[in-house]
Amino acid sequence: MHLENEYSADLKDISVASFQSNKEANDNFKPIISKMLSENLGEGMIIKSEVADYQFKALKYTFQYLDKTSSASSMANVLIAFNNSTMYLICFCTPMGDFPITKKSFDDFMDNFYIIGVDEIAVVPSKPCEANNTGGIVFINNSTNPYDFWIDNVYQLRLAGRTKSKEIAIKEGNSHKLYSKQVSGYALYPTEKNGILNVVRCSTYNWQVP
Image 1 (cartoon, one colour):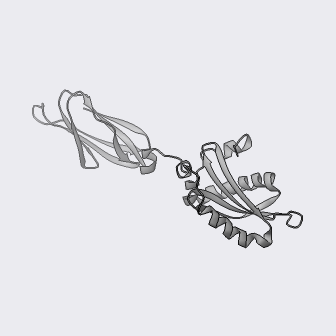
Image 2 (tube, helix red, strand yellow):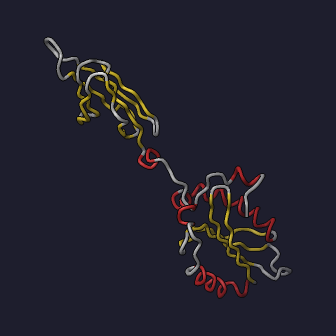
Image 3 (tube, one colour):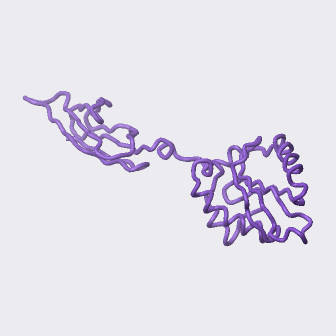
């Protein structure tokens, strides 16, 4: 099933992994899926939702039809996996009386069912800074003399004159202490510089001396 029109915005960047740690995302997503299933299978409601971990990861919904008497199928197991703007849906419908037995058969079958690559597509890759809650800092030495640099009293590196560092990861948060000290080329006392840095995740900052 390809997501189009009204559903595409609601399902943008959804991943199975997000539901394992985000109950609110799961609760917000459930009405969207319920509406989609009602439009395609018949009017009904989701009575159970979970993350399924077969040979591939998927969202698993138990769907119950509202009109259980006139429909040949009154219950459904629905599995959903994602790949960007494409949703993969596996649906298994059964009469209510047969549901406990067919549910077990369905689970046994899915335990041996493979969707190649779904483990990769089920998780939206994140940047290292997002996964590690870090920003970045670049030290710049505008002097002709070398300087040493510290972050939170931990020594980082020495920069020769007229050079800059590679980006250094620094934890997201406020009031990080920056300190630099001139190594050589001074007459009486080395030039020192102190600073405070508030770090926002995935943002990069420059800190220059002198």
